[in-house]
Image (cartoon, each protein chain N blue to C red):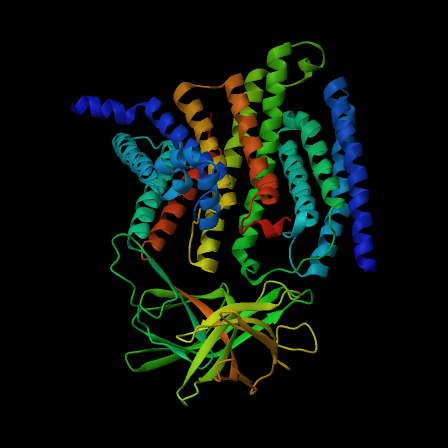
Length: 356
Length: 275
């Protein structure tokens, strides 16, 4: 039995078959639409148009190849084979008196690949990611429920960063063609009664308690309103509008005023006199709907709107907001170590001239 | 504006010189006019002068290296391919036959780029990183190496089919062609791996994720796996004949698809550099 397993693990045909299977799976991942890159509506349409094909694709996980159990099994088999191959190559190298540079290169490359695979699986299982939108001068309190989006590995127990982030200032600048030049968030991170003010920018991250903070590409303006009922009861509501990718496109937003039944459709202009991303003379084209009743018009900061049922909506403030990504991925440095071994192996194997 | 006009003129001047050099390389290989070989090399070098100047002018005007849009990308690719070929041909004279494929490939892609949108696109903040330079440079080197490799593979297949007849007698022997094809494919594999890895580190620095199965990432991984398949077939099953040559052609087609076709057809975070 042991001999049989050994024969299987060292069989070149098995190695090559696994490479071909991984190739086939990867081809499926690029040729068949994947759920990670398409909307749910796309798959609903597909299901309606050709139910049999969709059922088949869904059954084998071909619409989510890289997160399917079959792909995981494939990666595990590759890892197993690599483990044994590395063990065999290592034992040959230890026994040999004479140094064979090429064999060392091959060994280093395979060890690197093995480290990358193992560390990636660990990272995937234990990673924690979150995304928050922080309004200028507001604070994210470091809890889980304030995260707007969250993604945790199978073995990770929730994501509670445990430190506070206050957005002191958000800066955005543009090239002459209107594309983004730089995004910068000046934040104050508070933990254990100590505050530290730092600048976060794209490609400029900071690390706090093992959590890396990234400047996200989504940002915009928060429009704050005061809603007054007829009985003088009032509350504030805020809408975060995302900055469009191009200057020519408007800042669009649709939202409801909580527990009122009103729907707001907004087109926000930071500067009503010209196309601009910067606040100068802000204005809002607002359409308010409730049932069949609709009202629309141009609104300016501080202005009060009378709503159909006698309520009032006052536009009280505009502040920038910044998207910040929080990532805890402890396996990543090991993945990078694996990369280093892999490259070292390739250089030794293929780039260093050797006597033939 | 006047500066950019100069840049376009210099680009076209280099195309003319590369076409001339390509023709001479073909004459050297087909008719065995060895005395013309030095002229082919000299004219290629002469083409590099206005080409380098054009790239430099654009670099200064745009404030970044040649990474954005087809115009810059294809021009810098051609530059890397020609420099790589000339460097290797200077060291290993026997691979000069590859000039017959490398030069035309370089000037054709470059010309295609010259007919595309020449506007200057500014670098988005995520692309302002040293990792971008490494990522892009190593991919260019990888494609350059695989281009020389595929040239050897094509000549291997032709010679294997037609034998030592006519002009083919002037090419290196089958074993030598297979050796060069394999050697340059291993360079390509190494550079492609470094390209993937530097991109991965850059993605981690920029987005907090070192791998995201983005379509171009996945295609790049497929190319890498195919290289791996080729190398394993050689190592385990001693595929050193025309089967190996066909696999090298497969590697080239996949790398070409990854770098120059997928950015047009797939929605990807990588598409902005090329479209």
